[in-house]
Length: 296
Image (cartoon, rainbow, N blue to C red; front, side, top):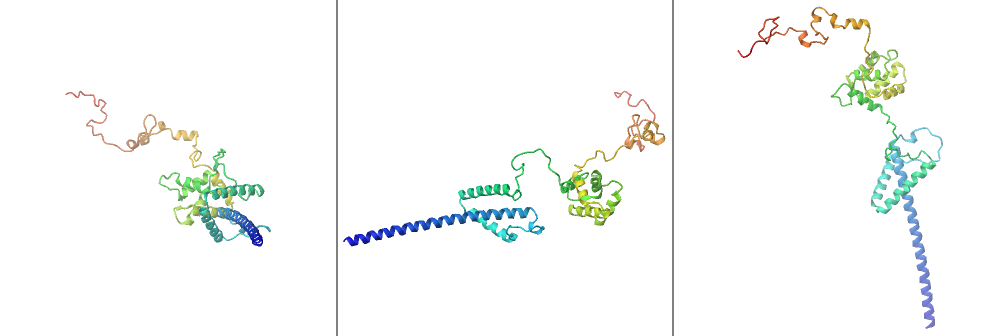
């Protein structure tokens, strides 16, 4: 009986020892699982950031660079597949885990900005509701749209004529009468064999002018962007001289030219150019028109 009790006690101790080992093994498995999930989330956020950065700017692998210790970037197709997998995994995760992932991504973004300075772009003031008061720089395409609508109420801003382009060039002082003239712009514009050109053709038009006149295309684009909105002020100055005043004084006009203006110098319109017949019944030169008594 004593031997059976001793064997039972030994069996229970062995069972408890085995149970503790199993619990320790399960806790180790759970810890490794949590580590794997955290690494997977970090890898997913890194892939998403790289995908967003490569879609917003040219690939850094195409630019010349020095020897780098960074790992080789995967192709865009592989990155897109990884992003899709990560998005599906995020949709399947509980809300609490999604919140934790977002917090980790924000913390990683702060750390990377603090360490590298340029890996993740800072949020713009407009996105945070801040208004710095600085005017937004207008692009060349927006200027193209503004000047293509100037003087044409039916224009949709997608096509531009030669006269509108010359107006833009004059306001930006690209046409100075010496280096570039309206003759040069007309010759270059007629190479497209159309009355209106699109924005893509307009860029080729600028390159053609800069090439033929040996002017920097970048400086022309900067002048066109910084010239402001289309306007009529200062485009044509009125010549003031004694000769112009003498020739435009209606009081000194004679003959048929004098009959085209009234005593104040204002034009009579069609009445000053044509003899309109008087159908009132009165003879010409009668001064007592409409003075008779209408009761008779």
